[in-house]
Image 1 (tube, protein in one colour):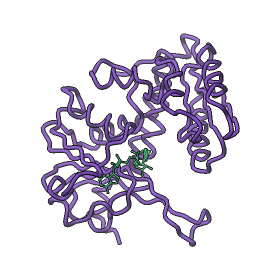
Image 2 (tube, rainbow, N blue to C red; image 1 turned 135 degrees about the vertical axis):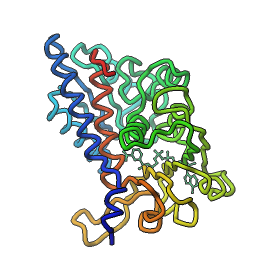
Image 3 (spheres, rainbow, N blue to C red; image 1 turned 30 degrees about the vertical axis):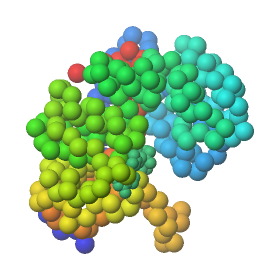
Image 4 (cartoon, rainbow, N blue to C red; image 1 turned 180 degrees about the horizontal axis):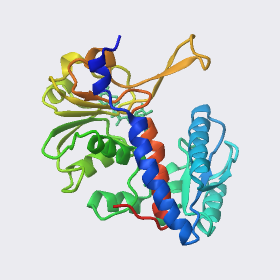
Length: 298
Ligand code: NAD
């Protein structure tokens, strides 16, 4: 049961996403005055239900904002060469400013090779090695949507990471690793002292007990409980894990990586699942799309 105190410390990702959405809408007006309509191409291979849902949500947001979308939905038996051809078609399409290859890809596809075929200037997911390199060096490039959204959450909820001890749990290429780079850089939304924990970390609590901010991105349910945190910690729960729930129409519900009920009293701020990081991921992808089309933000 949540108390009023609890609801005050729960960070509302939807509200933060709304703020960013209105900034994007302003920039879309500027682009329109220059006769530019941003275009996003989506390549969805196969019929994975979760991927279908993510793509539908992204395309719906594009529609609402007036971003043009084109999509291609090849079957899961597509060859590497055929996938590269599709990507190249969108690379040379002047109406398309951003290309999204929805992951995961089927086993026969070399994912890294396929992603490297997207033109870096259309790589709004920020997965191309050129963008990874630029972001790592602090020299621009597209920042992947989830890490960018997490930094927006911290800054806009009054939890600037500068000078703080921050622990990230999870070292994936799309969340943990880019966050490590961004949060340690001497930049707005950075300047933290960061520890990156992963599956080979021997004593997770040793690190989390000393953290002012914890970002859990392991994809593992209940990885963090009250015994592992100090009073007043800020917790960002990135996890989006499906657990069976016969009371839901879908048969499952979404839970984070953190044991929310256990940690909520000790934390000074925490993102819920759903309604925390998720809404930011979609809106930050839209922002990258607008940037790819020539838009700019302060
Ligand atoms: P991933 O599986 O690629 O990476 C998980 C990382 O966590 C790995 O590096 C692994 O070393 C680490 N890890 C796993 N179990 C661990 C443990 N017990 N202790 C310490 N480290 C552990 O996953 P990902 O793509 O980075 O996503 C992580 C989670 O975030 C997933 O639940 C995913 O669904 C979710 N996610 C949510 C959003 C969103 O918009 N809300 C976006 C991206 C990912």
